[in-house]
Length: 613
Image 1 (tube, rainbow, N blue to C red):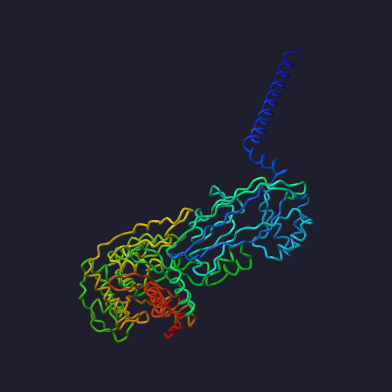
Image 2 (cartoon, rainbow, N blue to C red):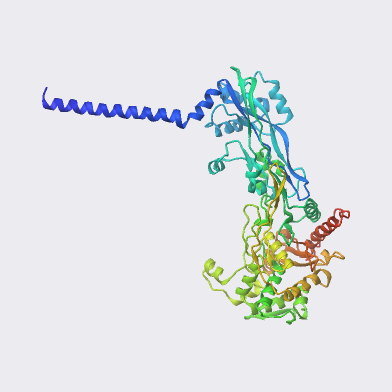
């Protein structure tokens, strides 16, 4: 054999050795994956050749109001599932089930396809919250449909149908949630919005299991063992159902969209909160159908949008107390500072009108708040400057997130020179401050931040953090949850603050526009606000009387004047006047004090809105 031949043979042997080594290495890795990495999976599959492990869904925790009235509970329902390992012809099983339940075959097939990567012994839920007719149809054909399971499951229920956005809704976990959270698996029902989402980990509980022996066709023979599911934790909220119901009744009576938030001004506990239009969270509890979902997402009124924490609006005249606080605290004016209003004033060569054509005459701070004199606040705002207004408006809770324990809260805006430079690359002009001084221009606020604003004025300068969770029961009794710390505490001069409070008292009990909130014996204080959605010139150019061009109406309030126990805001989208919002506030405040004093709660209101321009 020549040298060349020997070299060629050696090369071939070397290549063969490498290939054999690679092959054995691949086999070793494969065995390791099968025996170690996927051990649990194949062990479960082997056991399920003669045993089946059934999941027992845990009921979500019950949610109560502050008086332990159940607001969110569970009811028993049935789900219908396909167990793939019990059929040799999946297409036939899908066709048969679709025919029996009168479902769209393509929709059933799409559900199966979404779960096809899961182990075949895991049931695929086709129908959640099945009707009694559907359950009966499947059970009557059990011999014909051995691959179909009917399983009792607890389903979320919202019996009172109030505060939809507060509670939110539940739904089947999506792929992103499974990937982002340990412990979640496909098919789990989780909170998708509201408190259901924020406190999902508490409310979910722990699923149980039942191991059964099955025969060759998958029929259960006997139960080997059963671990009962553990119900989720019970939550006690700060919400007062009677206050919440009073808010809902007020909105029902007037028929406007909008939002309301009612707080305990000392602690920040939320006594009631609503957003209109709302939706029925029961529609989501067992899987919302396409038509209902399309109706909600396609509705121009955006019922899924939580206006209380996600709506941003101009505050109008309700912003004037922030300007007054800034001017007083910075020593720009005293409570006795007077301005003459003749119906308008000129600043920087531009005329600014007061809402009252003939003017208010000469007014001091108290009466400027009472009569909502624009010229007074144009003047004071111009003297104070945007920086000081921004500082104190923020300390009072405006232009900031409130920190409420609800998801997706947005931030309002109290403009500043720095904001304008960053946003528009332009300097701030003094004339812009004049518009800001009456809550117009670039100012935008959320209803929840306005409730905090009212509470801060009520309690003397403490910017409370609104919150909804009061106590948790993990099975050993209620354990109180500490209130979150205030966002800030401002040392507002009580004498100066009293001048603002005097003005707010006069708005309701004097010659102001808040008389609809007046409640004899309780010294209700508040401020109406009417904010333009479009300028008067814009309305003229549009040539419309469309309701979507009508002004928004605000009413911020607290009561009693000197030792406030309740504070909040009512916002009416296109509500025309703030005095309309005061009607709802009156019903809420009256309900609050009637309940506190053990009196009969007021009946449903019968008031009407003033729609005159």
